[in-house]
Length: 368
Ligand SMILES: O=C(O)CCC(=O)c1ccccc1C(=O)O
Image (cartoon, rainbow, N blue to C red; front, top):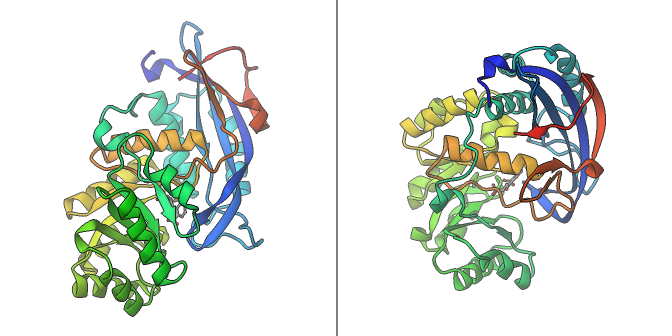
């Protein structure tokens, strides 16, 4: 592929998708049974008039849960906000250099758009790896498990082929007895694993301490957002010596990595959901600050479709090459947006509806 300064954006298409989920997926304490999102596809033309396409998913995590209530605590923007913003940008991008994507990403007030456009630029300019070549941690998976799964589902998750070093367990959802028994069943099936517990701010301080005291300390990597009141989290660390991770806390516009780490003893990791946080450049700065203060960063899904999840694996390889990302949310999706054969990758037009097209008519092209 030619250097980026020889490429021009000659067409932009914007699509939306709506995919059913089965089983439902947890979004903190809520559940969703479908996922909606957008896909932006650009056609690039070089000086010899060769054409290629590149695409990214842009899917804010907002909308309606299974009870008909709005999803709280994740993206502030709606899918309609994203579509309005991208529809406006599409026309502006025609005949421009792909570098214009970075400029738009840097000025967008919508974190999902900022992330998506910066990612599209990184894919076009080959700033993302094309394949995973750090298999020890990047091709390993972290299965997501919780009370309520059948024994068969649990075994399918834990006994799959491939490397499982860690398991993410949703806790603070049912009774302590059930959850402790479930975790010991996980250890029976997969004795080698360590735990990434996720309480989604579900425990009082006393409950968090009672719960964690029932588990082997050396098998716990961290517990995400243990306490209803996040100001209690350091006490968990001070009393038990167990580190906690921040997830929901990163969504607050006032969140500052260095301040948080200085003021709250015991932060072991940040759970980074790029779709909620903004541009790759901003994520890279956040990760560098955390690492220089001894805090791990784990990339995690915001329940994207196959396109978003595949890209997050590459972003994880680029930004956190020594960590296994938390991406085990795709198996519930009843459709994929990409159709991949050994020789090509195409969009699944049956799962997509075109919203707008700007620029030249689409002709057959190769995808990046
Ligand atoms: O991090 C993972 O492994 C899976 C992602 C996940 O749990 C999640 C995904 C989207 C929104 C909320 C959550 C959550 O932490 O509950």
